[in-house]
Length: 490
Image (cartoon, rainbow, N blue to C red; front, top):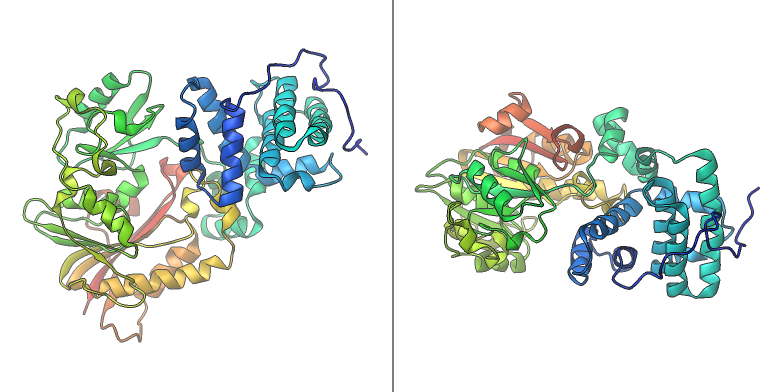
């Protein structure tokens, strides 16, 4: 049996000199604070990381990359890392202090998966951080445990990261994914990269994506910009930094994940039509739809939360920008990125669809229901979701999705079309909900939902001519989504 909890050396067993003490703005300190916020206050990792990096502007790109990898890597492989540490630690009190926990797990992640970080440096940095957070006894504990882990990795080799990520997913989630996708595809989904995924940009309908690719590459030559694989409007960016500093932001394009763009295009909105974005949030899909219905059409946006609708309304009125004159508009962050294109949003409605339709009128040609869901499809972007969802959430969410979609369907005209969509890939929230929507319902709403093939080219291709499709990160390079098309009968 391995020795436990004792030890006084700090060199990882190699006798090398220790590196300098990490500063509060170093990459590991930044990552530790992010992880502590995720565990302690249920912050989203991406938002917390962005905030911490803004407070540490002196970090060079390599340190930014290290902090990012440590945050996402620890969250994705957390259970496997904790199990490995438990092999050498008799007690688990180290997990009660979020900062101590972060430094110990980052040390373990570095030892197991970062071959570019020498083991003595990984141990020393983690010990310094743990000691700063919890005192000398905690530092001694971290030193002893991580030295033994370093020795075990050196003798047995580094484990596959993909296996650790799959093993760290909660058992209920692994089971649900296997039922939904099959065993091999479930494991590919859980371990899909890159992590973190690239940033998506959505070029407004009518804009020249090729021209904007050239303009963005010229404005940020150290970043990479490529055309998306699924959405005809998508640009995939890596290393672009703060999007608000780039030309065209908020007027010619917005930041939006590529798969989310595909959901909006799947609705098939056409010039002159009246469209309802029934769960609009801050309006990114409304932004796409509002351009698609021009000339002569109109988009209305509804959401449960008035604050999100206020953000959408506040974004109206930004001037248009051309790719040729892009340089003059760099840094325009007006309206959080929605810009002038959202000006075609005619009305906004705060409504709880589970209670009623509120003031939302009838007669829409098309209705998009991007319903609340588990968010499992965004795991590679939001790994903390796996720590916060339970199997019992799925039936509750499915009932909510059915209620919202059926009530929103009452606002469509006879023969109008409705797309039900979720950022999940789980059968319980996807095919099972679509089947419930298509089944006869004795709810007094007076509508029937008939599955129908998509009439938008992008969606027809994704669905193979059928009435539903699923997007998967390991297949399409996007986050995970499901969408189904219905014709509304009254």
